[in-house]
Amino acid sequence: MNEQFPPVTPLPFDDTELLLEQICDSYEDDLSNAPDSSFESYLEQIDNAFLPSLFQELLVLRLAYPTSDGTRASLGRYLKDYPHFEDIVLNVFAKYYNSSPTVTPTLFSLHSPKRRNG
Image (cartoon, rainbow, N blue to C red; front, side, top):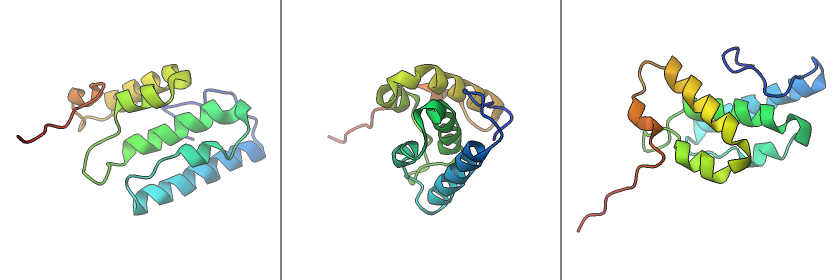
């Protein structure tokens, strides 16, 4: 687990924590090979009681890897797609970007519409 982002749900040190680690490792492997990988399917691999912790860990990983076009994950997208995890999304984005000196504050924009030529 990432020490900067403690689990949202206290986890016993048992098989569940190991499962969380395995799921996160699998998603990180996916991101290394396919930078646009979503973590939606990984959320289905764990009991609902531990879903907030898994969501938080996967979102931290998503932020650590640029997408195929070199951009970072969009705050607006995650707020829209996961409104029930709004507090987690806001907390992770704030902590991640405050700890990363190479990321500019403009990445906090809710969305960055693409310009159309013409």
